[in-house]
Length: 398
Ligand SMILES: Cc1ncc(COP(=O)(O)O)c(C=O)c1O
Image (cartoon, rainbow, N blue to C red; front, side):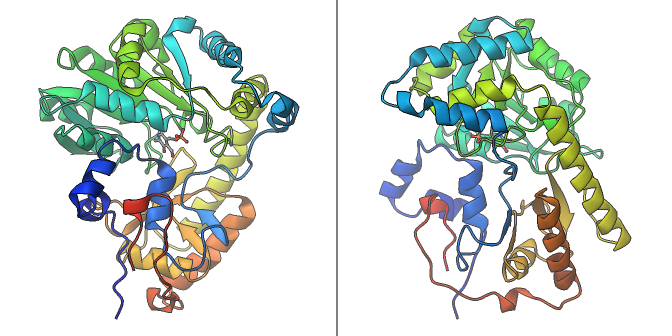
């Protein structure tokens, strides 16, 4: 019988041959790679309900769409000044100097290169468990020790335990709201971490999901010249995951150290003008935050009514207890063309669910109930052949 494995095991990730290992040593790991690697192979990648990659089903706002159409005739030029303009706009919107801001094609690349620049075999990478995996995988490429510290009881990052765990730390990674739990770490805890961390280390704050939550940014610590780096992305509330735009806020010397690893590449100009137009839309964040919160509340109300367990989230994703090996639940949901997200080994019965549209979440509810009542099981999932997909060695083998 064919064995189907969803685990992104160290072995499958790194591959088995020396050549594969060498090729992977510098690879930037991204959310879509992790999401697609965990998705069952049969049934296609773009059919059914996709609530496994923390995407925003609303896509870019109207003004962003118009800006993209209007910039297309200029597509023959790099148009570097558009990058400068967006940098200035971001700096002005956060009240920080422009030389503390850099714009990139999403936040995955600066995340990877920051970790690679500030960790090493002598400087440890410290992260939460469960936490977003990409930074940890970046640390592995430079052979840094990785320390995973369990989330605190309230699902915030346990900054005191993180400090105690690695006196040799190079990077403390804080994702708030956290991917996958959607839970917050307070500004005072982040400040404590920044004040008490070992000399030479940095605190890397990933604010990819901050606009969905009532949270305080850590950009004030960057302004105060602390050893703090803040990452933002246009992939989440702005609905631009496929367009690729993100930003990094840090002291210029920290930005330079990161760029000594990454280099710099021209930005896609549709992404630049779409980001710029999105920032100018005063309704975008409050409106989308409200829509996401309303759908999330209605899903949580339904889960409560049915006695299902989950972790209350302030973001566009949450962890759901399937009360069985999470991989089986993913497969049983996929059999109904509802693709829910991956598991984290520390909580093997939980899967991550992204908040989709109201209608997608209704389909999720119907499918999940069938899984929980045993009406649909993993064994009903059609076994397909393995296929080549983006993510290469991350791909699930059948
Ligand atoms: C916590 C976190 N950081 C960073 C990213 C990177 O996103 P992007 O490269 O699309 O900006 C993601 C994507 O899902 C994420 O979840």
